Image (cartoon, rainbow, N blue to C red; front, side, top):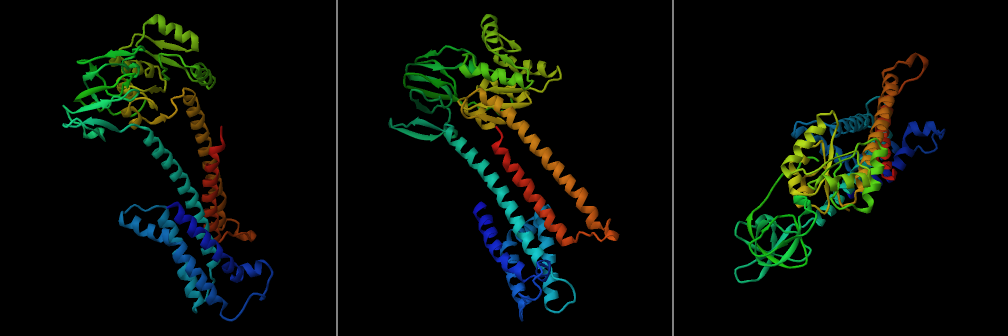
Length: 419
């Protein structure tokens, strides 16, 4: 899609040059007189403009039929009607009707709209590729032990109760189950709040999403846990990381109140709170109580954002206003949260706020520009200053409107330079 808009834009732009050179209005504006006029020049102008109309305007013409078919009219319909009206009327004038031709307005309108859509699609596809790359980071397969003892990698959603799967050192346990072979220690901090690795031997329960330690184990799937996270106060890991204190400092500098939900006892939570500068903490919170704690904070009239990485965070994440998943957390959290911290770096939580504020600023800028443009151009096009000799023609209004779209798109692209 991006390549198509790019190709159509450059080809149309090249053909636009002779169209402008052959347009009577442009010739008069440049004071060229009849220097570029020749017999049949209007037919050449018609031919070149036709190429741009059908080739460059194809995405918009196709979009018109698609929107009509779905009975959802939008931008494509407006553009298609504008260029079709200009093309048909100008063509009839070339072949005998008395009037003015608007070929140069037509081709420049198509050029500008192609440029605007190219920029827009490039931004959209860039975001899509980023999400695709993120998805590739998430484990999605299990090492299923087949009846003959061989191991086969299968999608997790193909596992059924009773299936056995191998979990290698350092891997996430694919699904809830029971250890039937092997011995290891498992990091369940993200699920239970227990900061120390838990020993696992035959007969022990294994929780899907927890991280296997040094040994290989075989697990029999008992049930598959699927919890939807829709959203997710800023929560921190039980183990203090170097970047945590700086992240808290940055967030507080933005006027954000920082809190912690933890299953650890009050003494540990109090020490952590003092160490990294939290405003408040909730200690000895059971998994099922987290959502209620979020409700309690919201009842104060606060908008709550929560970071979480475990299955037991799901109710709280769902209750919060914004959900932020830790990239190294469980797959269900990553797949359904509003925001994913790919690097599992707490500093990124502060970066999210900065990005949100920068995005909002761009929205305001674009809104002010679009409103100001229309407040200025529409009265001129309506003839408010006609008696003073100032009139904005519909064709020029269409070109300026298209230019406005490009300016808004370009301004939005500058968001990437905001740190």
